[in-house]
Image 1 (cartoon, rainbow, N blue to C red):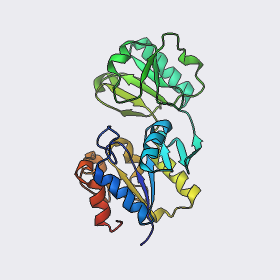
Image 2: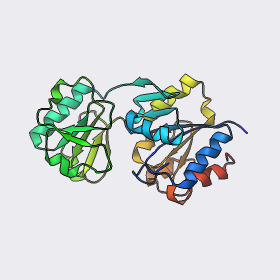
Image 3: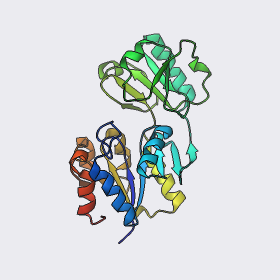
Length: 254
């Protein structure tokens, strides 16, 4: 059997929605892929520290996280960079002037910090814990990994993000985070000497679009956005309907 190199998104691809809980068939699928000699890795927009917890739980030692801004190989961080800090500080200045609540992740830990109590009402309970600190000075930050903005899609249209990338988390929260998973995968492929023709990508969301159409074999989950399905080489069933297992069986990988 030809060895394949799989890169999986987490939310909505391996796990059901944003629960970080994998269906039993997906767990079995990973086990069988590894037993058959295939390489399995993650490619997620999640912070490295968040991805690391999921990776440890499910047997991954290699992963692209931070939307392509960090690489973990053999369980060790080999690359990790910040969002452009000056641009983020300028954005927060504009949010402050407009009275829009925000929070930031200034360290590689599952934590958000805000100076605005109103953000606490919008903070997703399943996301990072949020600490309210009215004395926090965002202008002194040297690195910054995420900016969370409490705004609707309608409010979003009036915000000047400059060149910063954004991903909508839910109807109330917009994330400023990298959307370059494909670049992270490409660097890992080069680092490990992986043949491009043997790379397989699984995804479902808007931040997975960047991984499709890169010359790798791409599979969209049945619950994926329509735009991603149109780009995919193959569309499988939804994640909670054995989508991973069915796709890998279809192609004879398990």
